[in-house]
Length: 207
Image (cartoon, rainbow, N blue to C red; front, side, top):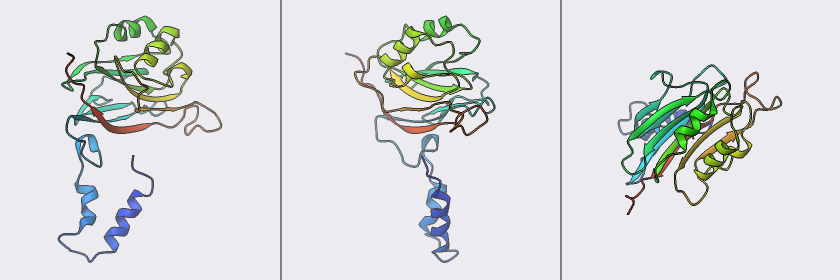
């Protein structure tokens, strides 16, 4: 994730070189964008992703994989609660994307969605507004089995982004969680939105 001082660095580079210098490398950070806006290309046999949780109850989440927007407000397929995209871990193709209302919805809809996953299925999750009110013990256990460290403590209006997979042995390196706290919240009643990007190794075909 780009740090807050990145624009200053780019401006500093620009000022340090004569105007009109044709091979000025300072233009590269703006011109060179890789899949999903990543600053660097992913290695071979890796899938590039970028995801953003919802901001308060105003701006919807986004999930991008290999330069394809899987879920966003523009696509009109996001909603309050947990926004989940299931992806084939071998081919990188989207299997299904759905939003589950965790404030007023039925948690059984979510359970039916994530219980029957096939080995190697990638699971992208981005919260929006409230991800946890309807969560029960089985839901938290299933997300933990997909590699989540934070699912067990997820609470009302927390921000959460997570990428897990069916059949993983270890905890996922792709997870961020910010607790809803009136002392640290960025918005009135909600914590800051989370942004996460990276490169996920493709799963090898199951033998």
